[in-house]
Every structure is written in C-alpha cells, then in structure tokens.
Image (cartoon, rainbow, N blue to C red; front, side):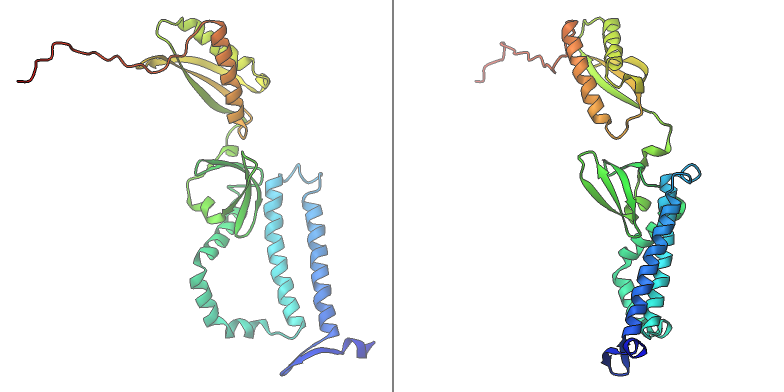
Length: 278
C-alpha cells in the first residue's frame, strides 16, 4: 500500500507528483464541498429563516464559501509541495502588472464584497438600473445576476450597482404609489370622469391589492382636460402589465359613458386679402 501511495505519477526537475499527493488534493476538494453543503443546509433550513431572511443567508453563505475555498486551495497547493508564500513573493511583479490591467475586475470584486457585507442589495430585491427593472437572483463576487420584466437574465457588474444611481423598490413599504394619466375632451362631465377612473381601478382583478387614493383633475391642457388617477400596488415587478389592464378598462368605460379622449387639433386661418406683388 505504501508503495502505491508513493508511486510518482510524473516528475519535473526537482518536483514530483505522487499518488498520495493527488489523493490528498481530491480529499481536500471533497471535504470542502461537503463542509459547504452542510453550511448551506444549516443556513437555509426552514427553522433558521425566521431569524435570517433569504438575502442575508445567501450573503453570509457567499462570504463563508469564498473564505473556505481560499483556505482549501492553499491546502491543496501545500499538499503537492508548493510553497504558497514563496510563490506569491516570486510573482509580486507579475501580480502588480496583472492588477494594473484588471483594475475594473478588482473594482467589481471589491464592490461585490461591499454588497455582501453591507447588504444594501439582497437576493429577491427589485432594482431599477438605467431604466430597466430587474429582480436580483444571485449576488456573486464579481457580478450579480438578475431577471428583467421580459424574462431575460441580466448580468450586472457589481460596480454598476455600487457606483451608479440605483432605485431599490424593495427598501420601502410593501405598497408603492403609481399613477395613470389620461385626457378627455373639453365639455366632459368632470365628476363623471373622476368616478369612472376610480371605478376602473377597483374593477381590476387584483383590486384587493390596491388601496385607491384618488382621481385628480390636473389641469386644462392644450386640447384636453387632463386627469391623473393615483393608486397603490404591491406588485411592483409587473406594474406595467397592471397599468395596461387598467387603461383597457378606462377606455371601455369611457366608451360606455360617451366620454371622448381627444386627439391634438390645430386651427389654420387663411387670409384672402393678401396684396398682389407688382
């Protein structure tokens, strides 16, 4: 058995790789995976979710995973006879050059560490970034993964989240105020329009999730009486679909009540007494 473990798989200069060293690397890898599996089960167990929300559990697990893998890689290198200290010291100049060329990557990694520690953004948070609405599915060390309203996976460099203006819709109360604008023809019954707009909100299939605020007569427009109906909704991610459904209801009820939505008009006056050129 000793001869089997001491058998050299290959030899290069003064270094060699034996079966024992290869088995040691494999054992360290498997033990690391097992430890991380146990930690993940403990963190995400249902009994612990009452004390730690999903986003916090994920962030904590990511930090633990990175630390354990760094330690495991160091042990793997040491087990095959690689002195990590000497390796890092000898590669100092190379590491400086790589660092200069990968500044943005390191910036993203640092931003990822900030996100995981600070937890200003967590898994399942809904963010508005550059006009796109995404729900965060995963926060990695360099990038984060989100899903937008078109069900497209978006890969976000972490520095984009930490350095740009980002709206986190999940940091506020459970319901958010939204509005729909509409204009009606001059001469329309203002009270009837207000009533129809409010009824259109209440008729939506998700009316139980709405807390109607009010319909407002905003101003006298160039070719219409302008109204705004305001309502609260808990469903932030699919709010555009909800608005579309409500607009359909408004249009139907306007037709039923003979309320006209005008289109822009322009009066053109022609003068016939233009003096003739001599």
